[in-house]
Length: 179
Image (tube, rainbow, N blue to C red):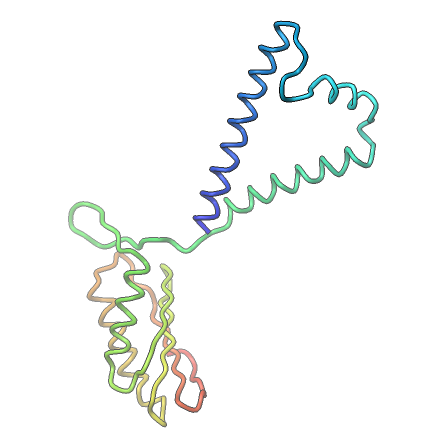
């Protein structure tokens, strides 16, 4: 989502820059008494005189502009998962990348005997681990998996440790709840 925001901001900034330069050029051209160069502002002006504010075309343009503005505003207001999590250090502030932490927890989970794969999503409040096991009894892996992941979370030295939630699915596809 951050990439989308950056691209939209760059496109919007470029459009505003180009529009501003065009307006400046047209003002200079009009000051010399010449016909419009690029932007036909005289034709636009005459066209607006013939269209009242309550015209359907005007309404649709206004509605489109309001929706575009609200969309841009919503993109900025939407809360995203943080890219980093703060570490508890004695001196200078330091952060740990969320994706690095997720990869570290995946390695901790897959190092447990009986775990064949794992996926992890981390937020400041929770670390959700979804693991698959080759064992017939998936529940026998849960305590060791939870302990390994919690041990890794403690070792990372986060300022606030997220709560670890473990979900395991066995060979037969049956899943088990949070732990």
